Amino acid sequence: MITGKYPNLRLRRTRKYTWSRRLIQENNLSSNDFIYPIFLIEGKNNIQSIKSMPDIYKHTIDKLGGLVSNAIKNKIPMIALFPSTPNKKKDYYGNEALNENNLVCRATRYIKKRFKNDIGIMCDVALDPYTSHGHDGLLKKNYVLNDKTIEVLKKQSLLQAEMGCDVIAPSDMMDGRISKIRKFLDKNSYHDVQLLSYAVKYASNFYGPFRDAIGSKKSLVSDKKNYQMDYANNNESMREVALDIKEGADMVMVKPGMPYLDIIKNIKDNFKIPVLAYQVSGEYSLIKNGIKNKIIKEDAILESLMCFKRAGASAIVSYFAMDIARKLKN
Ligand code: PBG
Image 1 (cartoon, rainbow, N blue to C red):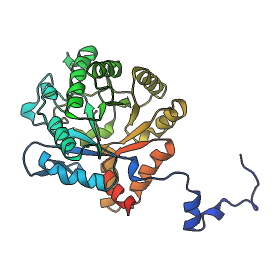
Image 2 (cartoon, rainbow, N blue to C red):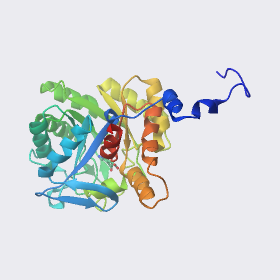
Image 3 (spheres, helix red, strand yellow):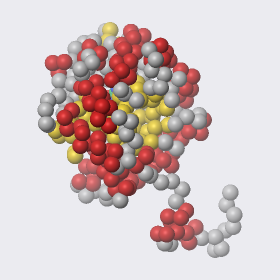
Image 4 (cartoon, rainbow, N blue to C red):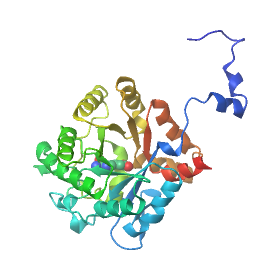
């Protein structure tokens, strides 16, 4: 690979000037690379801060207009909706997931009606925002039931599709849900609704602030290790992706982000499917706090996002999305 040697060859030569560095840059970021997560709360004309996520807010539905039009102005292709369901609407079975007037359904209808196809809407499919125990599925003796959960996820997916959701993103890690959801959507004539599988989702310690935001942290009984993946594993992630592609996933997600760049690269090298990265809440808060406390420079944000492109990601779900898209545009 290396032709020539020092002193004729000096790799620093091309690094001397900005124009030259720009010329040989191998990857770049643009607004097209981002998915912007939005947290929803009940109520009117209200935004609420999230203690563990500096500068990130939860919004009532009537506040979404400005937010979404900013995302469109900044050329962000897709938003992702996450509800912070009031405790009194949570129960053991997560019934609120199937309520056509729940936060996500109302928000989706509102955004679709107002913005048509100027921006994509992605909705998570999983029960954790709605269950009193904070798990992604139905429980029996503290174990999440696979096949029974899928039956609910199918209905949740169809409901979201009916509301106008463009990309259904199962984040629950049940076995076999992609094929069941695909079949169910097709049977109901939603052939064009895309499936973004959280194919590789690790049982991670970096989800803390998100669980705080949607209010599942305090209620979560034990952990999610009996369905989310062990962070020691790589081969298993290849099997998850292979299965989900067979089952009909249009895109796959790796989550969390930065600690799992090897996994993104592996998928990209082995499967020719769009791979998305989720820079999760814990990653966001660590970087944000580091900047606020002047431990690292603000440029660390771009660095933390560029690495996903280098690893082969097509897009990144990031709480930095709006700020960075605005910067990249100017
Ligand atoms: C669960 C879900 C989680 C996140 C998105 N969907 C957390 C979990 O598995 O508990 C985390 C996102 C983040 O940390 O930013 N369906």
